[in-house]
Length: 363
Length: 192
Image (cartoon, rainbow over all chains, first blue to last red; front, top):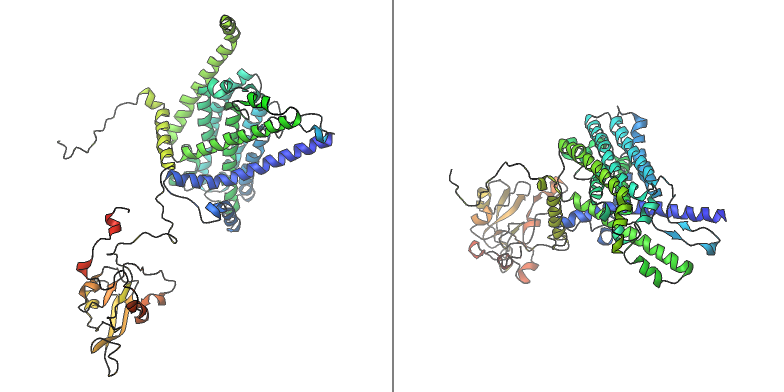
């Protein structure tokens, strides 16, 4: 029955991949709608009902535009840049647990099938590794363009991403110490009750993480690599047609993935309040189990969509940081704060058995 | 220096407090402002389907008026052309022949009357200069955009009021003189 397990896995991976692309596509539409609504406008509403076909029209436009490569650009690297950005963005979502497990015994699969691409025990490391690879896409693209604005944008992107990756990983360490595992699945399982969500246990870590996530995705207020007023378009100044489309699309995929990671690490992933209560009411066996899992998947996507909205909400609220402010915030505030957070968390984790026994009389 | 109004704000260069340095309270406040706008009524007007009512004093596309019997009012006196600051109007006068009394109101008429819409600045001085109340700038019609330079010069074929509008109900601005001009009720009611 290994074959069936493999097939079920393949279906899950394909569905996750499809949903990733779909959400990224419609994020472009949502971005324009949210921007419009916040600015008291209506937004795109001509292509299809409520403008729902707008992303398809945009993609069609991108495909049919002239695909221009500057004469002095390094041709292969120029093509490699957007491809790398796209590939690394797409690879990241495979370790995110989108739901608990599916009971597929009626298909003859003995083991429960987790709704997750691959459950690796170093899931979170894998995510960080790919995120840091994502810088290469920007860096190579900016360098290969042979244009000083592109190069400046690429340098900004690289230094910004490296600086904020530090604070980001340090803020995660506190969670890893509490959970004792690098697997995202384990971290989600650990937050099985509402008050155990990491956002309540690690509020400082959460704020650091979300700020760094904004910086990693090159989103406002940290969109210095592509700020139009200073650098024309930053690293993608020379890009046109679908290569530019890939860069923009990769940004939205990154946004989706970071929303997923934020909800998994800090907001209980596919857990929701009242889950155990509901589990008692649902029928026993495969049907009840699968229903609960699907509901969890729905809840998880709800959380992801909220965070995508939050990304956009912030974008249309806060102005861009100056570059020295960005570096000051990263190196002088966020990194010391996250180190402090690690120390405090470590002390509490070490002292926890003693604290528990001291307050044992309360139970 | 004494302030002229009480509207000016005194600026200070004091250091930010710790709470302000955190940025977070200010960020949350900003998010509150934007989310309130998110649910506000939208100000967009869906243009081709939905149009703003125009003021009755709006100066749009020109029209050469006819009188009640359908005769052209213009006598080709040239005062509009003289008044025109952009020199957009040109005309050729001609004498009315026998049997043409139903076409032209007076003995002289404009055989050719042209307005160059690229030169026209829609100031309405022609309308004020006209002693025969023959030229008006319509408040409900805009000069359309052009796709070729030959379309730009409007001759009598496109300027003279069509016969149907005389017999049918009065158009928005038929026969309005300058003193009749008033701001539309829509404007006064403050919808826009």
